[in-house]
Amino acid sequence: MTIKERGYTHWDGELRDGRFPWWPITRMGIKLTFKRRFFKLFFGLTLMPALVWLVGIYISERLEDFKFMMEGETDFLNVNPLYFKTYFTNEFLLFMVVMIMVFSGAGLISDDLRHNALQLYFARPLKKRDYLTGKAAVIFFFLLILTLVPGVVFILFKMIFAGNFQFFVSYPWLILSVVAYSLLLTTFFAFYTLLMSSVGKNRRYVSILIFGVYFFSDIFSAIFREIFRSQYFFLLSIKTNLQQIGAVLFRQRTPFNIPWFYSLLVIVAICLFAAYLLKRKVRGVEIIK
Amino acid sequence: MSVEIKDIHFSYGKIKALNGIDIRLPQGAIGLLGPNGAGKSTLLRILLGFLVPDSGEGSVLGYDIRNQQSVIRRYVGYMPEDDCFIPGMDAVSFTSYMGELSGMPRQEAMKRAHEVLFYVGLEESRYRFLEEYSAGMRQRLKLAQSIVHDPKLIFLDEPTSGLDPQGRKEILELIMDISSKKDIQVLISSHILPDIEQTCSYVVILNKGELAAEGRISELKQVQYSLYELKIKGEEQAFMDRLKSIDSQLEQTEDKIWKVYLPPGTDPQELFKIAVEEKVQVRHFVKSQTSLEDLFAKVVGVD
Image (cartoon, rainbow over all chains, first blue to last red; front, side):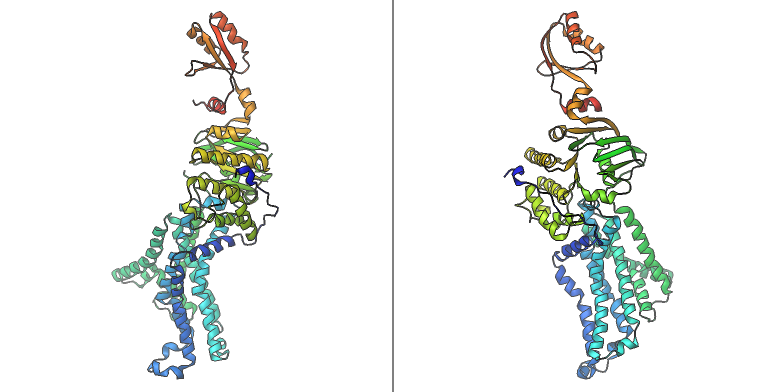
């Protein structure tokens, strides 16, 4: 069939100025992530800590039934803000968060850079902030499922298992702590991951960066602490800073002997630095001066 | 006027890419020509709002290039020169995704993606992953994504680059079909002169960031110079020296035919007068059908 026989018809609809022009980017980012090999299995695994904590909440309301398993050790099943803080700042969860970033975030910008796709986005009525919001929302989607959703579910199920609102009445601020910490963690990792994703065109290289910077920040923090005998080198560790802020938000004692707002400053500084670099690096055309 | 720009200047650092360009483009297929580094891609990027000019003003489809880039991009399609796609997607998802980003409702974009992929000849392979596409298929895909939202104007940057002769022919057929029968204006940037000559009626030639020529190809070819083909018998050298003395340019083909470019305003009778004076016989005299290549060489100053 020749081209002319195929025909071309004009579209009679009207192009819309959507309220959320970034939403198609987010939806496609989530879809493409779920299409990645082993991701569904891995994502299921990352929800295991939440399941364990949820079972803990159930057992805490049925202590008499499970006494034979506890051997008197039931303190860790005391569902209170510390219980929540332990979930949100435990190393395994943070490790899973980083792994999710490797799976879902590494290619968000780097794939577009590698395949020259940025010009396709910016040849559309999209602003830079729409593009970045769309990409960041992919990270928000996955991380909020790991943080905010379990936090809210824990509170709800605690009240359901207890059959009363006593828990909510005792800790009315806890839901705000859950929301605040989830948003802080997610926002930080969104900036962190997008920054890493924008510095390279190779997804594997970016994956190593995301993983490496996070863990080496911890290792270097430990080395410098040993050498200089100063607690302030805890500030070099991304994990430590997040744990410090987490403790404050859940009204617990900070695990490290440094002012918590220093940790907040470090986290905010990294986010600002990432925003600055992203603004410079993400553009429709590559300009070589 | 679909595209109108006045006194546009743009520099990459110290390198001046565009130097006072004034263009008013009419409807139809328009060729943007120029050697490498002439400023073609820079001009397209300014028209799309990727780059902001240092000075000057302009409009695309009546929308200001400085303040209304978003609106321009809504009604304009762009086919980039580079190989570009999103990995992990098939052609239908990719094309409908591009439609959605342009502002089409999701279902409409999907329906339309099937239509345009059919139109560009990718109907059989529309569910294949883009990573598996050949260079020719990717060119077609780029064309499909540029027309999925039914733009009023399309910018095509080197649309035939990297294609085999058959692929090139098919893409050019598509472009001609779009520009002549679909009421979509096309601006093609290319350095392949026959492509422009085949598809466009109007041409803009840039050279070193400046406007070298602009107008209808047929008119430009006539206005810029007169080209004649001659075969002569007799003392060639003296005759040619005399022609050079009146600022003609000469070129001899492999068939021993002389191509004589007479300067504007020169009466062709002059040729015969010189022939009589130099005692040479003119055995063949034809006003040559000039090509865009001749025009390009003339205004850009390259062979």
